[in-house]
Image (cartoon, rainbow, N blue to C red; front, top):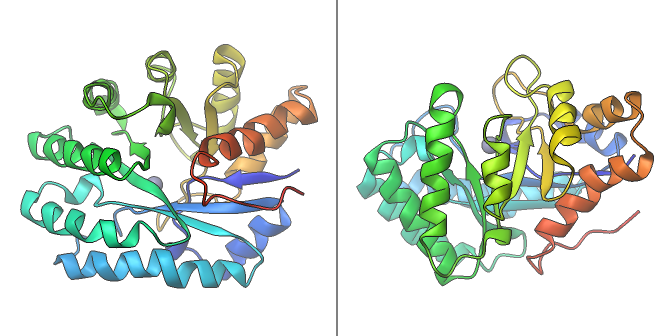
Length: 269
Ligand SMILES: [Zn+2]
């Protein structure tokens, strides 16, 4: 099995995770900027985080033979402070030319607040001005459907964003269709305890097909599983999906979306 991990917060993980991912057939890992588990006290904290994502973590990953890519933004959880968000967004352009940066993400909404919406619009505009791919985080639980609709509206209302260059992550059964119908990509985030489990993800694939869909583990500093994607590949195998069908979802699909950024180059084993 070979796969691409399109969404993992590796700065929070130990070296054993890199070893296990490489052994499981991981060909590349992509790391969106996210909440660190605590609020940063200034834009300087984000500057250092962006250096970590674009300089230090790629070097650490390379020691395990894994190409590492990143996405930059101020996450929705810290976007409530609009002044801080403006200062952080002003830092981003100088990082966009770095060789491992794929786009703007993971932006989106957390509590669907007015300030989060304003910062989301600023990020979408930044992506449009710099011709960047977009990776979106959708809120969890009861806020998800409303938040997903609000996010789709913001993206559709920007005339310079092509929907096939946007991935809406953390989709569930009640949001996957509206994302695909909008012409965007849908990401299924696999959680070990709650929300989208591997069997639920395969159920969704069997209902909605495998076009414009990827899977990711989104492993971070909380309870999460860096091997959730290959384990879901095994779940597909158990249910009788062919090796080609599994490869399509966990390797070819992320390769197709991410390959829209010319910097995403990996060896096809
Ligand atoms: Zn994430």
